[in-house]
Image (tube, rainbow, N blue to C red):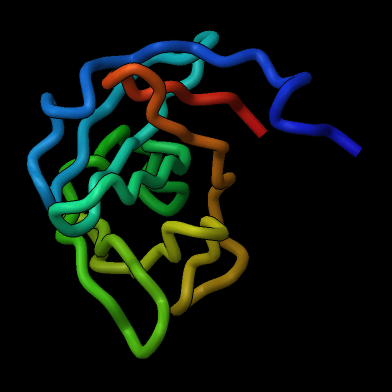
Length: 114
């Protein structure tokens, strides 16, 4: 079992660089990662940025919203919804992406790959 203390954390940007209900893309250990800030609070999520159906690095540009209790991003290409907590694709689970650990420390957003 991996603990958050044993993960390799990478600082990607200042928390204030991400506007509420939007995402940004960062290269973390060679992986395109989409980082989202949801609401005006410090609720941050990170998933793979590559849309598995299209093969394009675009999920950070998707629309953030909710479906029931799930916080999701809609891919700008095929409009599939990805759960920001788990990376699950709601319409086609075979297109799910990885979700990554994210935290804010001293005003900086840090990501650790799963």
